Length: 104
Image (cartoon, rainbow, N blue to C red; front, side, top):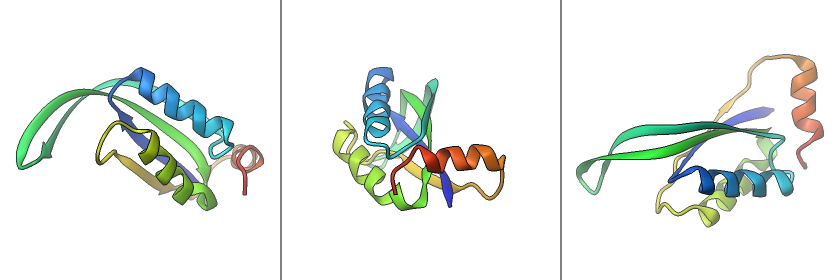
């Protein structure tokens, strides 16, 4: 099954570094850099406000665990946002393209 992943980072440079590494290792078929976002969240029992950079990735189910570990190792955050959702349907040709350009 194909997956879409959503990740945030501290800035564009970090997002590009992570995205390009995932592409080079064929863990993902595509990275979409969405841009800077404003984030409000709880951390250490306090409300925080920060600017972040978000991006989405397209991959297959077999690569998810490796992607999570790779992103955690490359990421500057102690607890980065790395979440995945299943792609239940879509263009068969596009979904096949994801499989063709990711390992496993």
